[in-house]
Amino acid sequence: MSYYRPLRQLATHEVTNQPPPLEDYDLHASDPVFAAALARESGDDAGTIARVQEYGRLLGQAEWLEAGDLANRHAPELIRYDRYGERVDEARFHPSYHRLMGLGIEHEQHAIAWNRPEHGHVAHAALEFLMHQVEAGVCCPLSMTYAGIPALRHNPALAKEWEPRLRSREYDPRCRPAEDKRGATLGMAMTEKQGGSDVRANSTKAKPLSPGDETGAHGLGPEYELVGHKWFCSAPMSDAFLTLAWAPGGLTCFFVPRWKPDGSRNALFVERLKDKLGNRSNASSEIEYHGAWAVRVGEEGRGVPTIIEMVHHTRLDTTIGAASLMRRALVEALHHARHRRAFQKRLVDQALMRNVLADMAIESEAATVLAFRVARAFDESATSEEARAFSRLAVALAKYWLNKRVVGLVYEALECHGGVGYVEEAPMARLYREAPLNGIWEGSGNVIALDALRTFAKAPDALDAWLAEIEPVVAGDRRLAPLLATVKDEIASGRVHESVARRLVERMALLLQASLLVRHSPPAVTDAFIASRLAGEWGHAYGTLPDGLDLEAILARAFPES
Image (cartoon, rainbow, N blue to C red):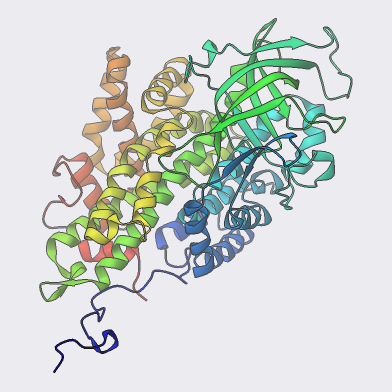
């Protein structure tokens, strides 16, 4: 008699106590915090809300979630030569990446801020918030295309020629001259090996092709020839790039298309793609300019003030991206905890796990309300000097603080899954690799903190606008008063210097978040945030909320159970 049985008769591999896949859910309808922020900051704009609702229903479908996964599993490949030996310098992508890019452009994620006269930046932020939960890599070229338009407008002739393409709802992934395409995308190349964030250390040189000619041979503005190297070129498959180089009059902003107006290939060469920690679906590269044709944007010597308009808008997206990533990580953790059982109880029913999840939910809500308040300030900046001043400081505070908070939150959400969260089949590993990106892009923590110091030192109206946002709330809720008094005393005393910049920015961001929660969130969330973040009744990790808080209400609000 044999002691072995055919494999098909063994019953040792029954899978139990595992959650179903989190898919086919509505990213808008399942997020009351986001839905309320969108309605509030868009002034209940029915058209904007309907657009975002449609996007949220679509992106939560299994096919799009899978597309995000596939785009990251199959990283782009650099093709330097075609089969005939011609230099092509193309980044080629998995079809899922192009599907997601096409979806984003079709829904105007890159252009709605400029195509809609009102609430456009809030609408853009909402679309970005949704897509970033599904696939962050495509958000980079979509964000730069959105953000580049204000900088491009420093050259009206160039903007007239290129804006219709950049604002188009048609996606054409082919590497072709712009004249052959209805839609186009825009990239950026500023940093160099020796300079990094110190862009004035750049060594790229710009030689005028016809000195004194302000029209240029093609009617697009003064033309130059660029020679130099860029250490980070974001989205090298873009149709054109904004870049910095030294012209005779100083550091200047230039527009560099992949193809010259005569249809010939420009002398822009991709040396390699970066092998990055995360954001793997998106190509980042090193490039060389070998006599590349370029058009000046703005005045000679005004390169940083010109391109900073693009940076200002991409910083909004790095803020939205952090809030979005928190949301996706929180939802994954809540979904897992509601289906996984241990010690005869669901994880979500265990007291310590509830504390962890609620703590993350508070962080996510505070991030979302802050990000969308900043987005509204971008919309209001078109007609209000106060809003413009507020947006300049608030986007720095939000960019700094949310990107410091997101890495720990994503890790904690991963830990909620146990070992299954650490394997690549689950989305958590990808989210964790993604988490540091927005904190580094467009200025790391020190750069942003110092920029905030310069802002309220050189532009008192920005600090006044921040105080105007905070002080009416403090008058009605004295729990915020001690921290506000500390900040005001610190600034008034003149003790603010570089070494304490991070601490000051952190306090200002927390006060702004708390003031928004007091205005717009239920007491369960507001009380928990103030008790932990402002009153000092908190440990050094998520899951250390004090006793006496309504954790059930916080969790029910974060991700309502169907």
